Image 1 (cartoon, rainbow, N blue to C red):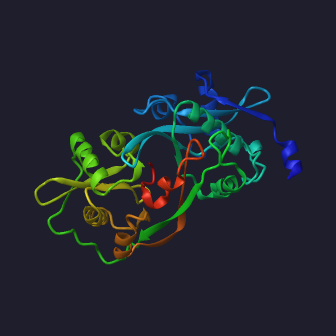
Image 2 (image 1 turned 45 degrees about the vertical axis):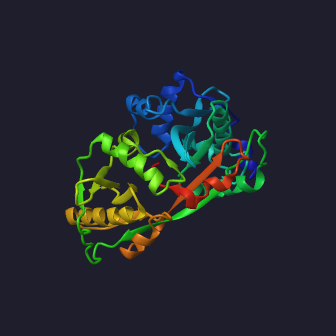
Image 3 (image 1 turned 90 degrees about the vertical axis):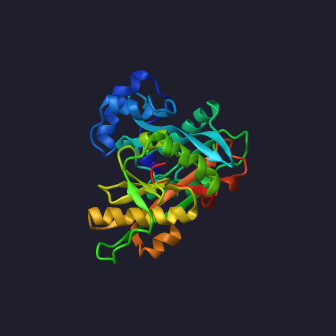
Length: 331
């Protein structure tokens, strides 16, 4: 381990500057594994989002080259009836020669980028930090839980909520799911209907903790997925379910009540598998566990990770407990 540290270049951390864009794009293409990204697409995600520019922590080597990045995308989160400014940490990207140390090591550059980002977010008035990282990052966040101080004056602290959620799937040969009586599925939903749905659902479910799911969220975060609106017999929008048809994954849902949520999942499972028979997957959140079990979804060999913390490192963390969150895969 000591040899690994001695070979790893020294890095410093700072806030993003506009001159960094070419270096960040080159790092993305070379090291992310997600292929090329145009500057226009990058700016639309991280600079020109409807919630404001992301907080971006940059790792710079001793030669001034961009060697790592961590994006903290702006978000609005409802916590106990109050919308609080929040950021969502997206997957950090590191140059290959910085990945030698174990993620559990506090001097790993991923940890350095995290510390830098939450400090910038604190200075910007951000109250909640959350993430859905790959499960491979669980060890790093667990290490931070056990090693970092909990104090409102601490400059560096790790998240206190680190939870795993199962991925479940419905087999292609399972018994077909019937469409719930009196319910229809509609892909043509007006923005004001989504806004009205959020206002109603946030109180009636209720949503104790969750990203604001209005029309802006649907277009920005779920725009690349197919969103199915679910309607009652009277034609009223009572819910929606967003599905990544390529990955065969339910990524998000919302409804005016737990019963309407159950019926919406049933209706959209019916619609998706009727249109294109095959496997359908979902994240097993507390709110969906019962209906997914009833629909014969079974464990898949993948897990999702939920990480969150108040950005003072000391406020009542029970308010951010997993069972209080209304979650989607790409919140």
